[in-house]
Image (cartoon, rainbow, N blue to C red; front, side, top):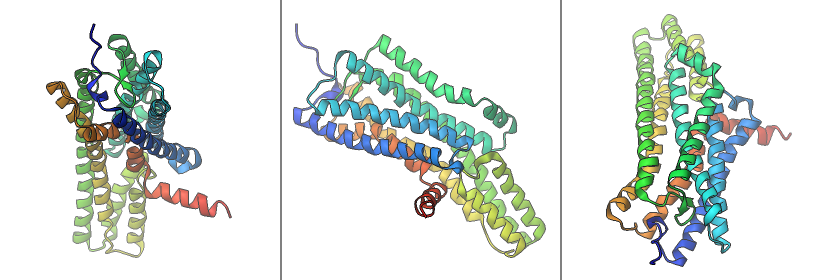
Length: 339
């Protein structure tokens, strides 16, 4: 009986697969460092423990375990061992569990951010009083999908780790739901963009019409306070900075214009889903190509495909953890805390 063909994602020479594992190991280490940095920031700094940061902590933990799983599979194969049987099933289960879980965390962060920034008081109150429900959904749903995948399809070696071996299965189970989530978060953040941008325009009109009027400035402060009350001022230092600028505006700087700060925040809201889309465009394209043609993608493109999946921990650290508040806290801890 003829031997079964290897998965298209695992096709390549011995040298190519060895190089692939080296590249994935390096990127997974970067992702582990990025997610570890977010976790450590939460542990060390009280300013990084707001409700939204608690959701980001969940994402960071998921990213860290995912990176550790990739590090384990690549290190095993670089040591000359082959992932197969039970070890491959465990690795594939963990891959499915944590990769899918990151999708749910990103969705939860978007939904909760919208509820808070758009001043949906009832929804925001429910979310804050049911934190364990919000935390449990990504873990529960992802482990459910990983278990179903193990029982119905099983996991096989795809080159650098174990996962579903058929591209059509991965498309139906992972990529179509993922793009539905991406569309949802894109819609949410576009809506938030317009909410914040309208606030930006209002600041400009108040400056022009009022010419430093104390009454109009008070209205501006009220608008910013509505954002601050959403508990996002510490998550977004721009909002906090905006409040400080508005207070100064009332007391001594009637003609200052803090509106660009809101504009920056609006663009930041759009950056979240756009970066997430960029990460998944190439892997999705490769799945469609291989599923429809039955041919493996060129090695270089296939390597980029896998790298996009593994880089998530590092990308999330840049998106959610690399901000002025975190950098200032680390600077104070490193330089002032050791005096």
